[in-house]
Amino acid sequence: MGEDPASQVYVRNKERACEECGIYSEKYALPEETTQDELLALIDKLNKQENISGILVQLPVPAHIDEKTVINAIDPKKDVDAFHPVNVGKIMVGNYDFVPCTPAGVMELIKESGIDVTGKECVVVGRSNIVGKPQAMLLLHSNGTVTICHSKTKDLAEKTKAADILVAAVGIPNFIKGDMIKEGAVVIDVGINRLENKKLCGDVEFESAEKVAGAITPVPGGVGPMTVAMLMKNTVRAAVVNGTK
Ligand code: GUN
Image (cartoon, rainbow, N blue to C red; front, side, top):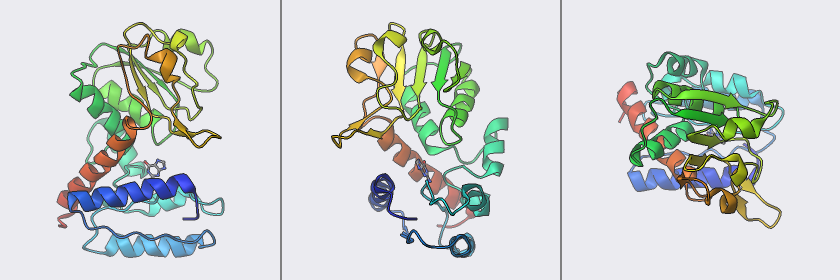
């Protein structure tokens, strides 16, 4: 909904990925002034539509729309973002069909890089419902020892410096500097921030961080494409769960 430029880019990337994977998709670019009832009516229609396996409402929604009400309206079996409380609860107990796309992408990067999370000190900076909280849960399921830090955390650098695996998801450009990172640590940057000069940068100051990190993801080109890939995976899973093809 609306004209958020970052959302427009993300949605276009998701559409393109669907095309590449051979997944049928429908996009509804609703004008800013669309009412909540109109949005809920569209979600209801798609919940019932048999050729649709997955539904995603790109966030943020405009201020007059209640995000929670919208997320709650999506059939949990079609909730390929895994934002619905039913799916959040399933992740908590470790029995889930869908994993939130960005944290799932981070786990895939870790796994594919041959890094074993078991027993590692994992520090997640950020506590959002979309990334921080589910990320912590997935690292815990992988037997990491997990600390969640946020804007009120005291002595943040002391916490981040203890991390074997550091996930930055605060949404503040270049927030994590090299001197906040342990030598050899795995540093995963979830931030996508647009600077005044239009350049994209992460939550980690790459130049100083790469000198100390054992492994590090860039922005752009690190976690971002993984998020989209995991959305495709969830959508195929949804087709199986729903018996739709
Ligand atoms: N806005 C930022 N990240 C996401 C995401 O993963 N899903 C949706 N629906 N909106 C977002």
